[in-house]
View 1 (cartoon, helix red, strand yellow):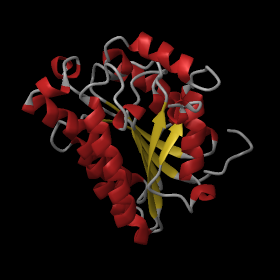
View 2 (cartoon, rainbow, N blue to C red):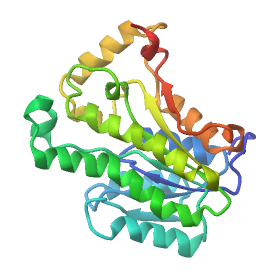
View 3 (cartoon, one colour):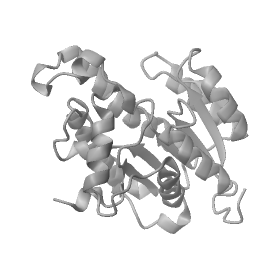
Length: 257
């Protein structure tokens, strides 16, 4: 742990670690370095061997399966947290999914089923987490999710995830307003493109990264460590006056016309 242990004694949940390159892992490492205790989830038995060693690095006392499409799994995670800790101070929702055939085609051509699944996994699951977290945050807390600039501008090959992330960002604003009286803050992190396993599902992703590098003011990309530093700040007391924001961590990419 570093000397900047501003999250000492805080309890957090991180959902969405797939491997060491995950945005969720970059954030989890920053939370842990700042002194937080973390509950970590993995998608399924296939994913567990990749996540378990990372959870060990993070010294996580709670490591549980969580596929939000499986009835009861998300609720079981929160039941474990309630039993073990009795409270929760923050959570990170870093999951998204769309069927490949819907993601790789035009929005105009996406199926009703594919659209509904993408919205359920990528957006509504964050709302569910907020509802489950609320009773565990009697003294306030912070909820984070992960978005992308393709939510507000058309980004080539981002396709169906654009409207889905737009819904997620709107949900952040409404949830921030609704939960503010309980001192629960809500934000979306909006990193520039990062080479994660989730990103590999997006068509021509390497080209997207190079376009982003060329357009960003400093002609650089960001890292999962960069995202983690911002996430750790947002869940701490130093950010208690902030809520409902889309926090761009993209080396200025979003300011360039």
